[in-house]
Length: 534
Image (cartoon, rainbow, N blue to C red; front, side, top):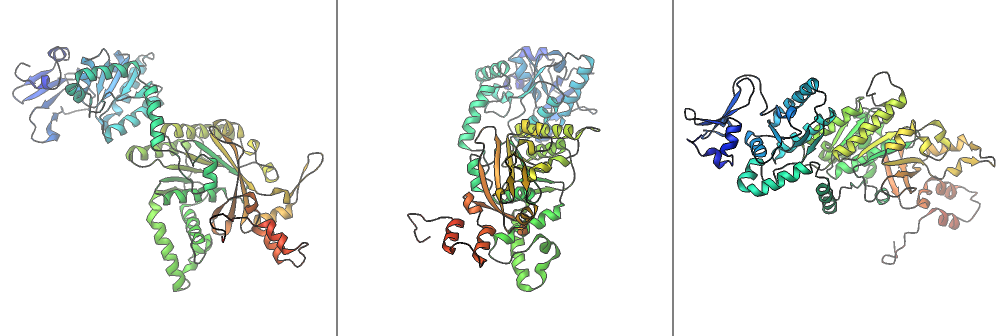
């Protein structure tokens, strides 16, 4: 070692070199780094012709440097480079293991093997890969894998503002020692992360506007990294409502993962294009008309539809639509994989349509157990990946003629417990088809109920049943045009009542009261001081 000053330049002392049996080969002008496993060693070329030639590995199975530390030490850092591991062990009394970002499975396999040999092994593992995109991705992926095996694992880079631990040591030895000791004493770094997270949320709010201002106002600005459960009876358009939000977000440049287990990807696209036509000032096409090419009947219609299609194609890559039945764990893995590969993208929205037909996580379980497992996995996804997850749920039959409530949700126990926000859709003004008798018995007028389902648009009310960190009990009103797959926000309950009631009064010869009175009852006062003409 007295023939080179390379280690000195890297901040590695002679004592450390002796402890870890480092050497120098004049023949190849390289540092020799023994791995301590069957004579396995690596040469670190001091003057490589190309960057890729710096390390020369023996032929054979890939290994991780100092892997035995996982079985011998109570606290172990996982880093990328051998000199990073040496830097940590030189300046502290903990262990360190080095592996490449593409070989993190070596850590997982080694821990599984050590655990089989000694079930009491449970080191505190601190992930501190390089401060770059690949290192951050490896940290997240390795943390998930190790925590899934039951190991205590933290992502808490000791690198500071430097690329890696060794660079920190070389540039600021005392600063490195202080940072290293702080990380060892507080591996979860909870208080610092807590403070930093508050500042981040203040500077960069994490709420995602849904495109419906009345809903955003009730949800403190929009969707947040929480588990949202939306329930409704048939014909209320719960899937369409979720699709409307997905469409709005994609137009904002926000990725949406839509897991559609009832409708095919083609049917979902038909709905979105039907909605696009509804929002336009031109011709309107139903989902069926879009699918069957009714817009091909004449050149004018084709030109108009081509314009809609072109506009949709500009943002459709933000919509990731999956139409096969999956498990909640597969949803979680797919989203996490995308996040690993796109760390600089905005956090996406995840939509599951719908909860009760997700595949079971385990074989031969009851429907209740299946829902419990699925909700648990999706709730974990919101916390782990910090993404909002919107889950559509079916409701029980009794909810057709009762106000939506916690009891309306099938297998409601686990949903009520795990969901951060519970939303219920129901027809507005249910008094038109429901009569409550003196004894509490609810009587449904089926003819009027069926009439309500045929309304264009349908009058719909959303109830916020639960909001873990915000307002509950809120009532939000919409008009739902089922024919063209579009929801429209209403400002007030009175506005939601315009639909067919006013038409009936206006067109009937037996109104029963002056038309002026009918107009007052079924219109909304939008007069303002600044624009009285409006």
